Image (cartoon, rainbow, N blue to C red; front, top):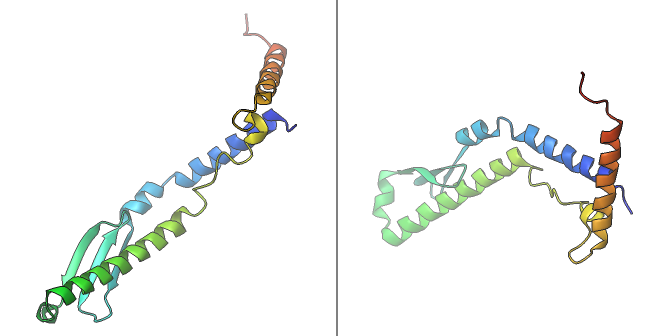
Length: 139
C-alpha cells in the first residue's frame, strides 16, 4: 500500500508546476500566429493560436486559375498555416497536458475498489493526529 499523504504531496507538486508554467502563457498565445503559402506561391494564409484564419492574401494571378484550383490553393495554405500554429502551440505548452491522475490509484484505488476508503480514513486519521500536535491559538 502506498502512503496516501505522499501521493497527495506529489499531486500538489504537479499542480504547482503546471500553475507556474501557465503563468504568462496567455500572453504568448495571444501573440501566436503562423503563416504559410501554398505550393504555387499564389496564396498565403495566416492563422492564430486557435487555428482561426486571420489573414488571406491572393496574388492577382491566383484569380485566373479557376475556382476549384483557387479553393484548393486556399485550403492548402490554410492547412499548412494551421499545422504550423499547432506545432508552435505544442512547443509552448509541451508537458502541460500532464496526467494529473497518474499515481492516484495508490490513493483512491480503481473504480469499485472500496479498500481505498480505508486508505482515505487512514490519511484523515494522520491529519487529525498532526492537527492535535499543533499548538493552540495564543491566549
